[in-house]
Image 1 (cartoon, rainbow, N blue to C red):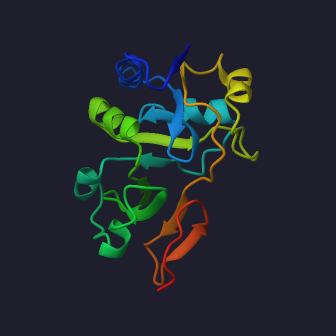
Image 2 (image 1 turned 90 degrees about the vertical axis):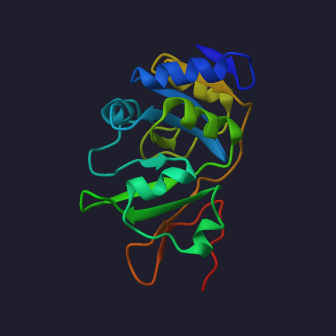
Length: 183
């Protein structure tokens, strides 16, 4: 099913599908992303993308959730870049790492509030290929593999910047839409 981003019931429909462990496609600040509720949809998204088991997905969160999800204290300079296209790799309470991003888009923030938990997010493409920007191409490739595609028009942005703050000095793993200060 395809719904316009700002249609009256799109938010409620998307939240309902995510709460029932379905995968959707939606605009995610700078590019389209597959979205699914953590932890239920990890394998479903991997199957759709053809992605291996070893590379984890980033998680979209609301900023007020960060202290419940990581013991890492986020530097104020980085907090100033949130919400936005910056993904931070931090330690989690299980002794491993997790990548978190606070989206800037109001629709995504409302969606997170409605679902009430983090959402996996990864670019819309087959594993190893470039992110897809054309809504028509996305529909052709994935309409039969997801429950909902949210139409935000064509989006020609860059993916988020990924910054690992579990190491010193911090390490940019992917330069994307956010320019991290060099100091």
